[in-house]
Length: 179
Image (cartoon, rainbow, N blue to C red; front, side):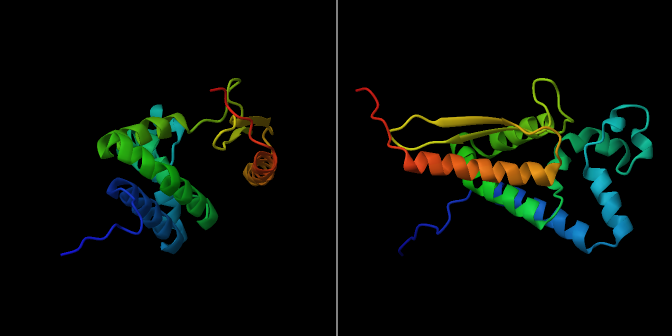
């Protein structure tokens, strides 16, 4: 019997996270509006959960201990889901292959719990870091501070800056690294 290499080498844990994100998004889209809103709020990271009002919010006490991770399953629209899925496929698979499924889930939980934030002095809203790399050349890095101009405007500005950085990387001659 001959064995074939898989067309895509995506670890099961990454596929499971992609499926969970797709199911949550599908439920939010196809459930009646009231149920969709309840699900969104039950999964969302809401700081008030960690005060005295956890029981009064959708998801109750359970969400108080799960929402720091479950918020990662909620996406604003299909574009948001597609972009996050593409990044998870591109980079999550390599990380999961390197560290294993359980460590990957733990890493996802830790980094996801660090994400829900309204911004701080060290990490203000609208702060974006971009990098472009090419074999034999130093990595280019750009820090962009856009401010609180809104998610859509931040996305548009980030895409433009990323394309400019890629263009700069592709058009510049790689400098040989010292031997």
